[in-house]
Amino acid sequence: MTLDVSAVVKEYIWKMLSDCSGGMKAFILDDFTINIVSVVFSQTELLQAEVFLVERLQHIPVKKLQHFKAVCFVRPTMKNCEKLCEHLKRHIYGEYFLFFSHLVQENLLQKIAASDEYEVVQQVQELYASFVPVDPSLFSLEFSFGMNYSPSDKSLRATDRVVEGISSLLLSLKWKPAIRFQRSSSRCRRVAEEIHRLAYIQEPGLFDFRQKVGDYQLIVLDRMEDPVTPLLSQWTYQAMVHEILGIKNNKVQLRHSLNDEKEIVLASSDDSFYQENMFSNYGDLGLAVKQLVDNFQAISKINKQIESIDDMHRFIESFPEFRHQSGSVAKHVNLISELSKIINEKSLMTVSRAEQEVVCGSDRVLAFDLVMDLLADNKILPFECLKLALLFILRYGGHGNKQVDEVMTALTRRNLDQLSLNLVRNFGKIVGSTINTECLFWNQNFFSRASKLVGDLKGAENVFTQHQPLLLQILDNILKGRLKEADYPHVGEVFPKDGKSHHVILFIVGGVTYEEARFVANANQSREGLRVILGGTTITNSQAFVQDLRSIANTEQSAT
Image 1 (cartoon, rainbow, N blue to C red):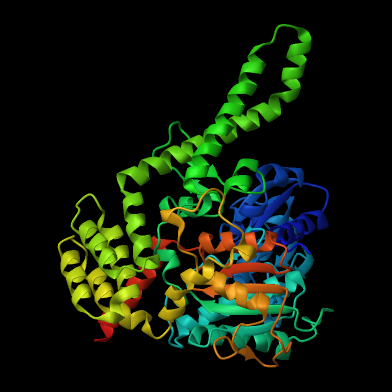
Image 2 (cartoon, helix red, strand yellow):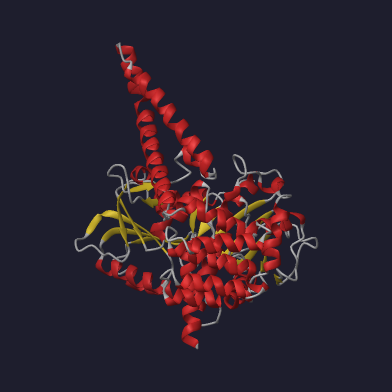
């Protein structure tokens, strides 16, 4: 059974646009749903569906456009409802087809009905998609939960948003799973309990799907259970691009483009090279790009040999593919060139070698010496020094403070701001209640035995890719039915007795990484019978994760 969240959402959008067939359409989206559409639909596909105008709900045209049919796809919030009512009262478009990404409260529907004075609303429907399908087995809610663990109004609103996103995914997949959560995280408990309340108590009929009892699981995890993975440099294509440049809705901003192209699209659905190499490591990637260029040059040479009308006809027939391949070659050469330039400028390979020694090595003295040497090297940027210090404290901070004090002293010479220094100083206390360092670091021996589950990296293992996320251990325990109830308890009824499930959603509050997504994708391609979907409040990288950590340090500082 294939679980493809991108395909599910794309089918929903086709349904919306086909339900109001005939005539020109305006696609009205809110600030969140525009992200959903942008990752699963191209401009060409929108034109094929007769969409000639895409507008944000918040922008109400001055002129009436009543020759357009408005297809509205929005989250069911009070703010969006008020904007829809304003649209209807002003009768901007000729007809309105309203689609909500989650359950709509009765009072919102009543407000909309009262505003439809011109009787232009033709359809109102719930199509469950309050999540962004980044890849077939990866989704994001595109918001930062931060690191707030207290039950404040802000964190409760964030919990509601997470519940909306996850429950909409369950409804779109037609799942009613057993629900588990990380015991050490209060926010994971809140999310799990609220989803259970919605699916099993408030709306049991809506979640009444025919499925094998216990074969489906939702497990809610906390990013702080594994703070190592988002702090490390990344060396596989997709993860590396997000770490160095950032990926937002499959788009990447280039800083040093070789031509005028400042933004490129990276989507596995319509880029065969990216689909084949998104999980390739840096070395293999360079060889793959060279092969791509060589193949294109061979095609170009053939196309230059046009000596007859038949040759010209063959060239014209192949021209669309030729042009598409030309664009793909230029895009990936540009991207690899930019990555290579930044890697050299920031000495990221030198930094990464030290990171891996700290996290995976067994020689504490060697790790300490490497870190101290880099902290004293002015070619290493302050942010990279901050990451090295945090990783060293995670690994060795509990074994004595002398080396940590020396790391702190070295950091003060690197012009780090006071908040970053406070973060380093208090890092052990910040993460101490959530993580299990024994599981986090002993598991490097475990991972050498787990390649059957996730497959090997393309190309030889090297010093830069030794670390494996804690998520891999969790996946292995799920497959074997050994995920401990003491660490990951169920909400409500516990089933099945052996704890085995073949369909699993892993959701990480605080953000998921592309490195973890790679292991999930490989697990899905294995023949172990496990089908996994991975999601998070956001797709994080080291910059975003450190910013979240800094916010905790700031809160701790304000409280004292």
